[in-house]
Image 1 (cartoon, rainbow, N blue to C red):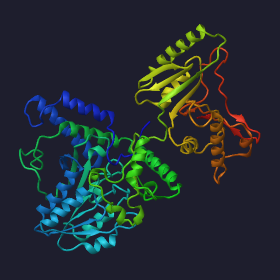
Image 2: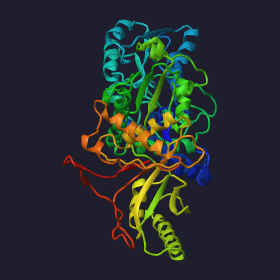
Image 3: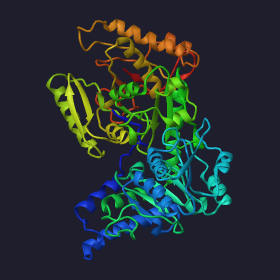
Image 4: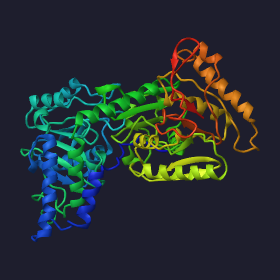
Length: 566
């Protein structure tokens, strides 16, 4: 089971993006500069991508320049405009929280005789408009400010910035690094007063190695690359047709039902923010809701180095970032964290969690334990019944996207997912199989330290059912007889750990639940089982499947399943 929370570093491509990239590499692979049909077919992909991207921004197709990614887009915007407009002045304004692909070109320009003023930010990562206004001089030619900060998710007030800049001097150009903003926010360069806008495809579920730079048709800019004169002499070199086609498709898809996508990702961010903020020693550096980017949560963990925690999470199949992945080969203390005033002892203890449309709160269970109805026959007839049931399970799962392996071990039937699959579809397909009485999704928890293992079990219950009253039963047995803790002791320890956890303030332990037998079960590994509800098929001896439904406790409250099996 994996959890990929590093979507600000890169994203999994949409299926439609994968398909069009493959098609333009294997079928429509012509050079777009060629005059024959293959070339014209390739050129059409480039034109269509420009149209799709321009539509998302409400700009003209000819104002989209394709590049190799965000770094080239930023370099082109900064160096190209500075060199083209240096007769008007050599003063540039930026901020202290920019990405390296902005910082380093600005450093290069300083070496060429330009002067750069770097604006400070407040504790939320926002610039001061008053400081910006005071920094503008008669020789200022360019202001470059990122839309969304890549580390903490701060959203800069770009429309107010543009209004202030152009109010002071309409000739000043305003460049916006929108690499973390495009696809997450609605951007209208014409309306917002943005002259140049940088975007990278692989941040929006497109391919790596391709991006674009929006250049307002009135902007004076020089090319960085010279050669065959492609893209109207602005960027020579054969166009990366598969990448451009994939980026166009990604742009179209990310902005389809865009508001729903943003609300969904924001919900994930807020959920993670609330859960982490409740942990002792954790400081969340990002804001909830739309006060910051919908996809980014920055959190500092007192007393733990970020690299150590990153690899500890990696061992659990959880992937996050300790900073900007674009410069991870050169680790250093984050200038952004310093700029927003993160305490010294937390600077090297901060992780970034970033979400995308493929993330979910639901668990992706690796396998299912199938509990089937009891039958009156034994021996050979029972084996025949189990074999028939396995065949029915395999047939039912053909309707579910994904690949599954169905096996029988020690009198138990297991369904193991070999690829990604839709959890709800799999459960529905299994519930229709005659003879199945219970479907128990499984996830394995492992820890060599017994005390940690007990804590993991209790935490897992809270993770799966954070807002529900549940009943539980402890029923343990050792998978290894040499294990130093007896089954009876495991029963008592996990029961006691659960009771202690829910006796605490905010816990969910009712007096009646403490008197009842807990409904938790522990099997070897231990593996965790979650009931999904009543199976429809039932079977001989158990019509309809004897799945216990909601039941009334002695205190008069109803506590329903699904119950948690460990």
